[in-house]
Length: 414
Ligand code: HEM
Figure 1 (tube, protein in one colour):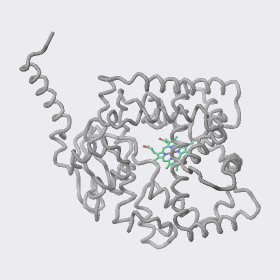
Figure 2 (spheres, rainbow, N blue to C red; figure 1 turned 180 degrees about the vertical axis):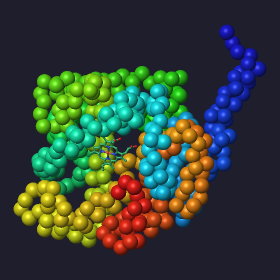
Figure 3 (cartoon, helix red, strand yellow; figure 1 turned 90 degrees about the vertical axis):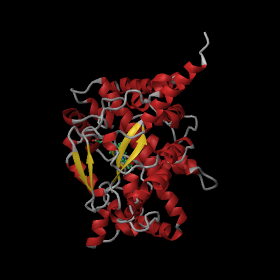
């Protein structure tokens, strides 16, 4: 059967109408400032790094405190990005009014992370997960395990030469999460062929395909069976770890969580994946940035090194001597600010109409069920609160004056 030209033209016209409608903000959001669509799509498809995109396309709206919220096209819809710290604080203080959104079914990230975990749940359900997670986190700060792993890492690094530091930090934090959270040795530091590292990287590369992130509906129309298969295999490896743990309880977070009678196997598995991602990608990013900025500034590096050596003497780090490193702590906070490992919070939406008020008094009316994302990266680079935001300057976190405290207050996260 062949299609006539009028039929082809009709299909094309219908498709065009659909695409234009999908890419146009809904009428009840058109009063909000909007990041221009074409440069945004170009940025997604050209593979521009996320924080570069934010600084280039979103941050100009926050320049000198002009706007506190802006519409951004992502995940197949228009979402309000909050770029003002006052709005973030107001929302965070009223979390019951702003529940996390139901995750989009088609997005493969949720197939991997699952939906019954602390990061995506709300209300009573969140309280249930949070109670178990907090009690497990609060039991122990396994500094001795981190010291052992650091020594292992140093022995692999040897006495110098060319090293790929961000790869090493990833391996270090993977083993740190393995040891302290699951009581399992992924052998990521010592084994460059560690199956978990390879499988995890493959899965994340598949999930992060720009086309599917921008248009998640494509997962339904043009399913990616091979990525789904890899995700399912990795999730089933977590299931195996869980089963093995049940017969080998030890001094790790998963064992503590398993003591809770209310949690199901799905709860445990989904929280394991959250810990795995939340615990290792984030910390690896933070360690990479810190070392990068200290490598670039030899004076700061020398100052941090002298402080650490003076605080430790011949001892290994512990909770006590780590308190005597104010400059190093400031460097860590500044590294987290300038290159924040988590760019966005999970999207939230209120069932009620809402009026958001920015620090400069500007207001934004949001109709019910508008998707809202707190944009941590944009807030950490707002030049009203962080002068020269692209400069690494730990002194921002050393000052004790009211102005310093006010500025530090400009990040709800640091
Ligand atoms: C530098 C390192 C880290 C950064 C920057 C970071 C950042 C964050 C942020 C911004 C959130 C809030 C997400 C949201 O609600 O939308 C979060 C939540 C969470 N993080 Fe981290 N994180 C780090 C390390 C870790 C580690 C090491 C673990 C555990 C091993 C962890 C476990 C969690 C958990 C369980 C939650 C959910 C908490 C809840 O919803 O009650 N994170 N993290």
